[in-house]
Every structure is written in C-alpha cells, then in structure tokens.
Length: 377
Image: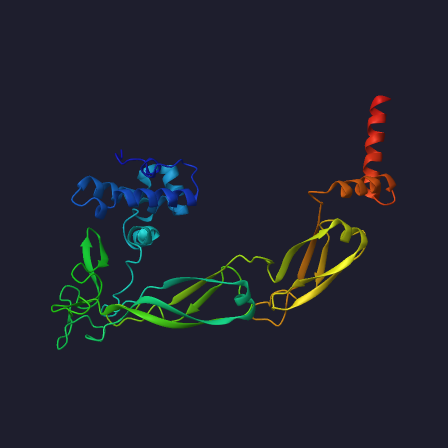
C-alpha cells in the first residue's frame, strides 16, 4: 500500500477543483517551497518535489482520471503508462511559475552594460491665452548627459572596461539547482557583462554627469490641461553609452479671471441689472483672441440664460475646428436702495400683475390650490 500523501491534499485543493484552481494552488505552493527561497532546507526541496509531482498528474485529464480511480497505484508497477516523472511534463509545469519566481530571468545580458537612460518629467503651467495661441517655450532642466572625459564608457581615459570573467560578458550566470538549471543576473557585474577596474574620475564610472540643459518646447494651439508632450532622446543619458531616455512635458492651465474652459468651449458669467433684464439691451464682453463682441439680450431675459457666440472658443488640438463661447447672464438684485428707490419699487409691485411675472404668478396659484385642497379633502 502506498504511503504517499494524497495529491489533492498536497496541493491543498478539493477533489472537484478545476484547472484554474489547480494552477493557482500550484503557483502559490511552488513559490513558497522553492529551494532557492529556502537554501539548504532539505524539507523544502522534498516538499517542492511532491508539489510538482501532484500537479503533473492532476493537470492531465487522463492521469487525473486514473488517479481518481486507482490512487497512487495507477502509476506503480507499470500501470497508467508509467509514473508522473519529471521529464518534459515537469518542464511545462514549472514554466507556469517561472516568471512569477524570477521575473525577467529568461533574458540575456544587457549588451556590455549599456543601459537606456531614465525618462524625465517636467511640469509646465501656461495661461489660457497661451493655450489658445500656442507658443515656443524655453526651459532649463538638470539632466544626466554622456561624460565627455570617458565618452560614456565609465572607464578612465586611456583604459577600457574588461569582460566579466564570471559570466563571460553575457551578464547572466547559470547554476544547477537539483534537477534543473537556473539562470540569474551575474553577481560580479550586476548584469552589465563588463567590469571597470579604473573608473573615470569625472563620472565615478557611471559614464554620465549632470548638466543644466536649455531646451525649446513647441506648444501647439488648443492644448488642454494634462496634455503630455514627448521630447524623444532628451531624458537622462544611458549608462555607459546606452541610449538616452525621453523627456515628457506635462502641461497644466492656470485659472482664468473671466473664462472657464470645457473642452473646446469657453464659458463666462456676466451680471446684468434687473432693469436691463426686463427691458432688454446689449453689452460687450471680451473674447479669448483679445477682441470683444456684443451680446444682445431680449426684454424679459431670465437669470441663468445662456447666449452662444459661435467660433469664439478654443481651437481643437491638431484640427481646424474651433469651439464656441457661451455667455450666461445673471440678474443682480438691487442692494442698498434709497428711500425713493424703495418707494418706486413698491409702486411697481402694486402695478405688477400675472402678465409681468407669469412664472411667479403661476407658482403661487398652484400653492394656493394645494393648500385649498388640503383644507377641503
């Protein structure tokens, strides 16, 4: 009778677990008991082998069916076409968690230590008028540039980096671990493939130094808050002659004293007097193009009404289209009235009827009917 532990118990799953649950359980346990995470622990190595054996059987439909019927006996004494083994099947099961355990371990070296420089971010605030017109801005940023003393190699002038003896310049080393081989970053050169014995004094061996750089940035018409502009190759210099990163300009728009922006449209609020709203009239408002336009309001204009002025908004980025401008009038209630003004308004109120204020008359008529209906159910 077999003394092996039940495969389902080994993977800590139910007998009806589907393929996704089996795979998730295998990954979790394999990462936990992997010998590389538990160096020198014989128990971990044995547990790791048991987990792989269990998963190799249960992930295969035919093997799982045989195991469910005969148990471990299905793979003993020639039954079931041989034991689960650790051949090609094991390689495929281990590949399920290889990236989880080692990330990019499958990649080769980095070409002699040449690494791409980091991308940089620069925040720039512009006005709404600048977003409307577009502009060319000059910015100064501290960036890492290729060291002139060593031409980016990181080695002192007159010397050269030597090939790493540990990895042979590959940047990776292989190590046998039980029944398989692991490949990892070379600890001698940290994956660069080269060793610098006499570093450049100007850059301390990094191949780059920090300098203040002035750049010209073209800001097109119609940019919005949060627009990102990419300047290829203007980021940090690469390590030891590697390609440079990019510079990203992130734009933000300053608040405007008159306009509020909504996409390509502009909005503004204009207070008008009660008399202007009642009698009608016109007024001038500024436009974003540094001009002005007249807005005519009819008699009886209510507070909150909007008036559209076509094509006086913002240009649409990389397009010939232009948004509109919307003027919203707000009727201002008179304040600090003189006695004479109060008397005139009181007289006006007496002369007013439902025809002059239909909305108010209609509302209070409904209120009167509402209370009347409550009094006479």
